[in-house]
Amino acid sequence: METRLFTQAAQMSQAAAMIAAGGMVAVPTETVYGLCVNGLNSDAVAALYEIKGRPEVKPLSLMVASPADMKKYAAQVPPAAQTLAARFWPGPLTIVLRAKSLVPSIVRAGGETVGLRCPDHPLTLSLLEQCRLPLAGPSANPSGQPSPKTAPEALAYFDGKIDAVIDGGACGLGRESTVIDMSSTPYRILRQGALSEREIEDALLGGIRRVGLTGGTGSGKTTVLKYLTQRGALGLDCDDIYHQLLKTSQPMLRELRERFPAAFADGILDRKALGAIVFADAEALGDLNAITHRYVRSELEARLRAFAWQGGTVAVIDAIALIESGLAEECDVTVGVTAPAETRLRRIMAREGIGEDYARARMASQKDDGFFAENCDYLLRNDGTLRELEEQCRTLFGQ
Image 1 (cartoon, one colour):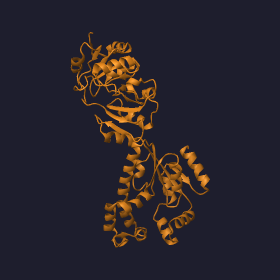
Image 2: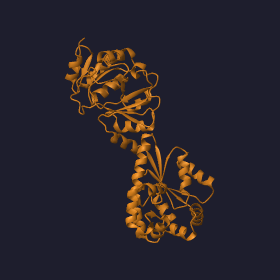
Image 3: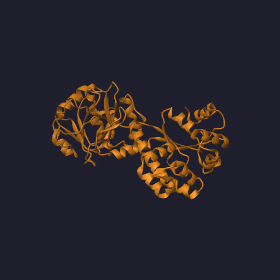
Image 4: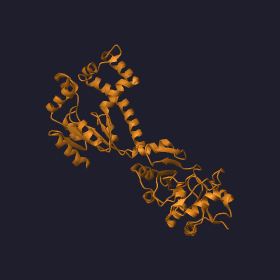
């Protein structure tokens, strides 16, 4: 067999014809050269395994032309997979998903998943577009040998054994793609390659829609938060996180003790004593927020990142100081919840078992309804029944 060498885009139609006829072509990518056949042709795939000396128990990935092709070959495509494809394709990322039955068993090595990747090289993308087929494409080397980064290296391995080599120059990265399994949660990195885990995690995090929820104590934010979490959102109640950190974060407690020593008795924080200090002194309240907001934000970030690996798509951040702390700037949309002052007063006293004077002082230290109306994208007025509030939620959030 004569192995042809193609160097121009106009020759991709010839390479595509070879592949359609069951042939084998080495192609350039941004990582290493790949050895490709029609990924839907079981006989061609079997020949690929044989010429590489690759054990058939090792599944193959499929090269595709664009993110839109994921739904052609994957039975389930989670939103997070679309997020990663939009961010990194074409590029050095292989996404493993549950395969449709049209993907041959030999490609899947008898399993239920298939890896999909869109290579970042103009000649190979042109080839994929002209083939209109997925390409089974492991690295173009005999198993156990170094992966080729140039066309001459690939040709040296397979000259006379394959139909053609497409010379696209030296591969820029020289490392295999990173492989992430998104066929189930939590998602897992199966092979660390050209993309770091942190880069992938950052992209997953960016795919989470963040709803900022704010309003004064007793306004009904918790009811709205519950409504959204029952529909699959991650609920992040900053007040609850703060109270948890008071029990678990020694660094935060140490900073509070240094700033508010009078609020500690025998080394234990007295929350009411702390409240009495800060609700009567705006500067002290500002100092408290400066300390606690930093720790709460760090915990929020950790929980959001964990949620991203679980395939989460929507998170609700419930914070009284959402606007003032700057958290609102990290949200896609902000919602303020308001309620009549006397209604809020009764709720606070009943819920927390505190007196009227303390409850009023707490309310007085917070922003009024006008602030939320001015600074939030949407406003929910909780001045009626629970059913009426839920109907407002349904109208706003569409669920």
